Image 1 (tube, each protein chain N blue to C red):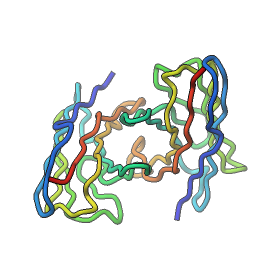
Image 2: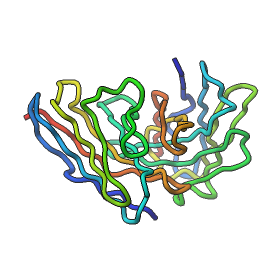
Image 3: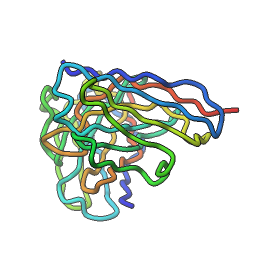
Image 4: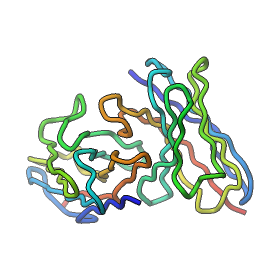
Length: 120
Length: 107
């Protein structure tokens, strides 16, 4: 069974930085687009960023462009999200998700999520 | 930006009912429309992709239809485990967007 495990969340002050990691097991990680999706407390889902299999193509939602960087290490089966200049409105559970090969940009497996709280 | 609007935002239903949720896109997304189920405290689960294709393991009481800018998710013979929040999501553009969610609650 595919497994995605996020880590790295926590409490950070506005303007601070945090790096999220997602470890992937039980599937060929390097063959899949991967994504981050977030959910603010009590709110809906928001796609944040995705990255191509080889890391050579990346996309971001406008609200994080220039502040967040998605990357991956295929040798270690790791998906990363570097978050800089964090804002209160970035507070959310961040999910790592695998994109389906049947329909790109649909998400067929998700991690359990890691909570990021931006507050002074 | 592609906006996705679901209706209703919430509904009350009983076990055995048939429930229909609507999702409207601000522009055509062809058939690139997916549905997810989320229960409290857990990650979303993909139910249907490309408008009407059931994800492996999803019960056949779930069905999807539509094209362009109007889509529906139908749950036939509602079961106790179906009470959850449902989200539509367009995968037509390079920056996917979700609907705001529809909460299905027990009457």
